[in-house]
Length: 172
Image (cartoon, rainbow, N blue to C red; front, side, top):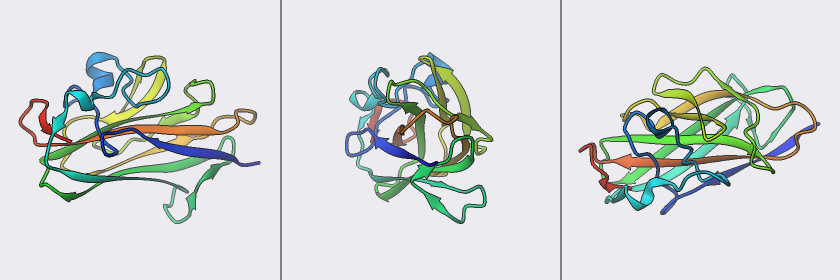
């Protein structure tokens, strides 16, 4: 039996996150993914950048050959979050994500993050986020779907293209 996974992207033009280059879950124990009950995303502070970024999320099998929009309970998938910059010349990228059920409860398990990502627990949720300002715009992690009976789930994420000056102005 397969269940639907919905992708929610929160943004000011689909982006806006973090309060620290090492990841807001690690530094402030905050969930800023835009999921119901999370802290506000950081686009109010991280703003003013001249970057145009189009986010892209894909869930595939572990070999990255077949894309899925539904999950099978207990199966493991590869999640890819890509922040495609079309204009602006950002110095780096960051993001934060979580997967929740209809009640807003963290579901499934993240494992094996890419070298520019880390796993944290914040706001009562499992979080996959950047571990430093990343020159790569692509972040991957394995996600093991929850057990049967969970129902539809939503992946929430927020991302940022940063100018790299260590402040909050000039980011998007």
